Image (cartoon, rainbow, N blue to C red; front, side, top):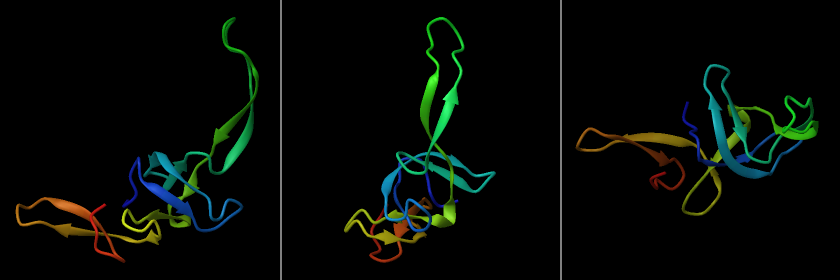
Length: 102
């Protein structure tokens, strides 16, 4: 999976198309990501103890990875991600459009 926690992404399809956010969590087994402030659902929360309060909370739900694209660090446009192996043997992620390091 080429998307990692902390990447800035834009939603390409669905009800939240065009929204941008930061990846909070990656679920590689399900091929999904959770993006902050995108695909928010209302959840009824029961009070668990005397201190925690119940009520309706907003919960960020997972999005399929193909529905989001990483934003290029140089110009902020959606891009695909590639890999490049450096001379010392380390592997880095690069922007396919501009060639900049991510």
